[in-house]
Length: 254
Length: 254
Image (cartoon, rainbow over all chains, first blue to last red; front, side, top):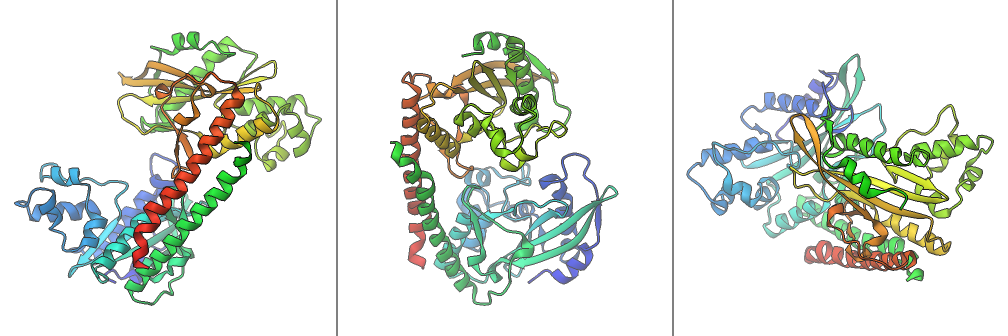
């Protein structure tokens, strides 16, 4: 772990931010300021190593301004896993220039990346309004995660990255959003069997960070294989379920 | 058809509404004022027969204030198909009272209902910003539509309702949203085979109203059976696709 999460929690717990001017108090609008707040606190810990995803890409391509073209830029990543997780699409990569750098995209994989000595700590911030009982949020595409596991196995690359989630639980108090609690997990410490896939919501894995265990202590290689077993089993289960629930009951009318 | 859609189009085409004060120009925020605008124009044609879905339910339960309880209130609907499409959930139905009537819900089936002589013309308004090339919008759950078809077949009830979509194409011009064109379809006039199901978006049927044909001239009973054939075939196809795309490629790593 590059970030000291205990120290981060001490800073964020009890902190508050002004209520956003526009938007509702659920979802993106309320969450964004806390995301920026956590980012600042991590950057204070590791100023040279902390990036937004688009900042990291702009930094990488700027430092290698003589490298142009999709293929050459892709080779700047020293890791197939990191290339897969962090790089933008081919057109965007080709068209990048220091005059028109990348901007933040809502569907970027990571909110925050901390990079040190070739290791990438990927951090996503999840915010939660404790006054509402909301559905667990979208975490990451279960298919994207399966592809990542396959790339890690193919390249025997198990020590390049970690994927982490930091949850900020807040309440509205006198025009302030006040952080009441925080939770942190390393995805590779959670038994993959616990990961719920919502097939109807773009195959997203969904969970509240505070609900996941952190007892998976086997090597990352085992995690990747275990996740793929879980994912493939869930695909077959979903296919069977669809036929049972959505096809069979209607066949008598055909 | 209860509504004169030709006349409606003459009124809406070229009309404009002030730009909404809050929100972005995509999606719900921009669409809502046009929805209300179309509603007013239909209500001007058929003042006694035109309702918002929640208004219709409030009207039905108010006129029968002595009828209480879920079962008795459900029996007020003279049609299983209409009950299925328009009624609210059991708890909401039980708890309804004239002091706490229903309010508009974003996931109500219909934007507008026109009722006359026991026939229900269900109308959904779809708005489209011509300046953006957007994904086709969610129309209705493919599963809900399959359940409706089964209910219609079970009850031999093919002359009770129609499901209609009215598209308003608009552009932003000098702080006004200006309607540039409108399109109308009756779902039961579209060959069910044309209906695209997005399995990852809550199994929603998605289309732009302007892209659908209106050449299906067989009886509604045939439409219902034809839709169920299409839906069931798509379920099997999706189940196969999921296994081919999401399971098979990863099995070599297990």
